[in-house]
Image (cartoon, rainbow, N blue to C red):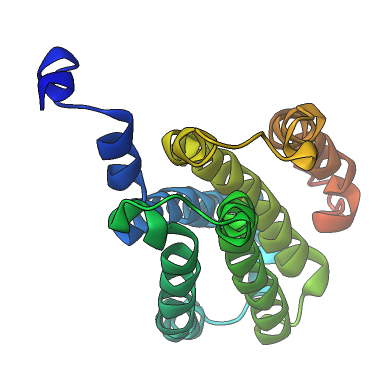
Length: 216
């Protein structure tokens, strides 16, 4: 109690407990995937040429399929992500010292949460490519947005769980596979440089020049 008074009520344990809830993970999922959805909407609204838009399926059909697909993914992903969080975080809420297995689950949690999102984006890329009969433009556009979304989500989750990592390592050493910062640097590079450059390189495929010379 005295420690909480000195630190303004925020001890390492209380901060870790606050970061170990499903609610916090869901908020980050909504934030990252919401930004991805905005990117896809902007792509189809502003970046596709008029000729490309003429080949898309009816907007009402796309909206209906999107609503049904989103509902299905939420119903599938929410229980799965809840299971991941609870298996990795139970020791925090119970005030116990984590086992080696729980530490391993904790450090793999951002990847597990991100993979569920990536699978849903890949499914959307395939589904909407088939509906619109245009894998070249639709599927590639959604897939690139999914890669950016999932990269951002992973980095957000890594930062979100840092207080929990610190608590888990209070009586243990950092695992060897977590000591290298190169993977995080590569993810930041993928988000900030690689995907935009790939997108530019795919412009001739995603939106080729028309007979009238129209180009992005």
